[in-house]
Amino acid sequence: MRKNFWRSLAVLSSLLMTGASARAADFYEGKTITIVVGFTPGGTYDQMARFYSRHLPRFLPGKPTVIVQNMPGAGSMVATSHLYNAAARDGTVLGVIGGGTVWEAILGNPQARYDPKAFNWVGGKSRDNITCLVWHTSPIRTIEDVRTREVVVGSTGPGSRTMTFPKALNELAGTKFKIVAGYPGGNEITNALEKGEVEGYCGWALGSLKQRAPAWYNEKKLRFLVQFATERDRELADVPLATDLAKTPAASRIMEFLTSDATLAWTLLAPPGVPAERVALLRTAFEAMLKDPAALAEAEREKLEIGPVSGADLQALVERLAETPAETIAAIKVINNAK
Image 1 (cartoon, one colour):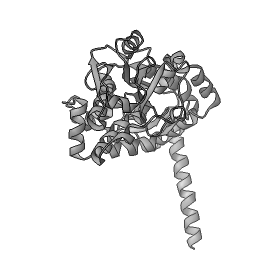
Image 2: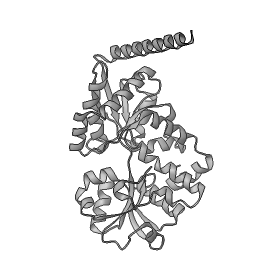
Image 3: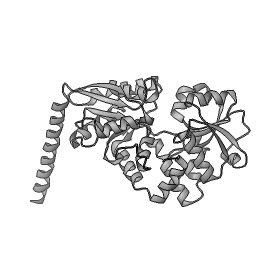
């Protein structure tokens, strides 16, 4: 009788799942999905969203059309607020936002009118590796040298990786980065690096670096000092992680929080309230897309790094970040210049 019970339960579960998939397929057939991107056209976030728009429909029941809508502003907080407060909650609107947008709500930014835990995280294309580096002509060889000698790095300003990460290293690891703020963007910092206006760039994602400056990487014109990542890149095995440099348990917690940006950097998410079966289908389709030979071939041509992060892992990470102790949040606010 017990075997029959479990067999019947398994059959019932299978029927329910099949029914849910059928309903979702019926729903998506003939529909249009809009991917809202929190940045302007032409950048990597926009490129990634358009990559999703071309390949995701092939793996969704009903083969919906997918289009991209750019909604820049406030480092993608405008788009994030739209997804949370105004977008349809039926699986026809998705979003591509910056990882730091999750932080803003947790750090109490009043402009962040959303709860990151409530979003449905579909998946991420890869875990990033955010580096601090110096130009090859600098006498600096390792991060230990930055503890004894001032190193000038360029920054776009408060709240950005380019200011938060070197400030964190100064306050938690005893380095002496001198931060020169006011550069409009990463391109201007790299130009300043090449011209010798600054010695270093702290906050450059390794994947973006390889895409936008492959010659610099291949010709070893950059000397890497630190990696803000969950694990060391195999080609930078001798370069320490930021979490390795923390001197106390409190400092380690702050570094771990900041390193979360590496995992949240390239995500696809859905608004709160999307039916569970549609979220499941979106996650399954996303994972299948990033294993598909045609999609992977295009990603290689476009130099989009692929190393999938599951929606469930992203959801768990956001929930952990939301439980960060108040004293850690207070310290991060000082470093991040959050108001």
